[in-house]
Amino acid sequence: MTRKQSAFAVGGLILGASLVARQLRRLRAIDLAGRIVLITGGSRGLGLLMAREVGRLGAHVVIAARDEAELLRAQRDLLAHDIEVSTLVADVATEAQAQRMISNVLERHGRLDMLINNAGVIMVGPVDHMNVADFEEAMATHFWGPLHTMLAAIPHMRENGGGRIVNISSIGGKIGVPHLAPYCASKFALTGVSTALRTELARYDILVTTVSRDVTAPSSRGSPSRTRCPCCRSMATALPHRLWMPCATATRNSSSRGRRASRWPPKRWRRIRWRRP
Image (cartoon, rainbow, N blue to C red; front, side, top):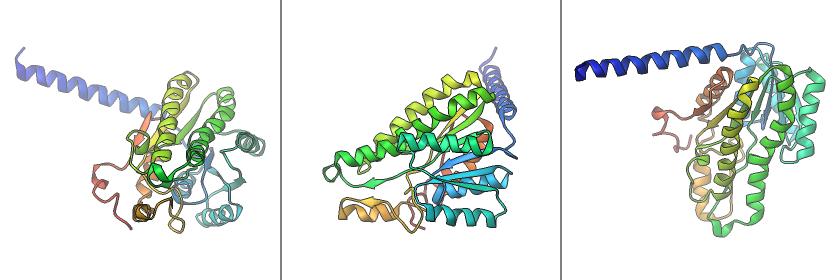
């Protein structure tokens, strides 16, 4: 076999494997119509956009957050888009509240088809300006919160024959970013547990997707990330708040198809991802 023939053979194998993988993803895809989808941190920002995306496809959306007033505003927004929505006031960083949140969803709706762990905080500043409480807050929100909700939801999903879990991590969970030490430490932990559970739970048809999105302030435009240091304020205000729609769409597609991971932004967005809107 000549070198050219070998290259064609290898190319054919790669193309065939790609087509098989695509077909398998399609077979794993679920129809979101009528599904119960719980989104933590769903009252604003990326969480609210994801609620619109899954709601547009017919899911009944349950949004959870700590601020009741923001939840009511988000509920009105979703109802204006003709989306079925329920709200829950809960702080997922507290184990009891996270467990009670899952129990309330099951009591109200009888099942939980998809869990999206999106709640987040961010503190910007050099490590000299940080304290242990900052690391504890980031770990409680980004790691312990998703872990609490997953441990509460997994037994039901297993009994129900499967489900989807989506953990919104960050590129900061793969690459350490200066002046974001608490954020990166907690996102690394979330990425690790999410990847591990993906393998463990696949046998029960519980598919876990890890979304490594861009580093953005978790809150909406009106509430930028907090800073400990004046020199970091320009960085905090430069974090993009309105480039979330492609990420919300990619998350919805990846989660419904059961993908292992979703990385955003794609190459075409990299030049503008740090541009202030």
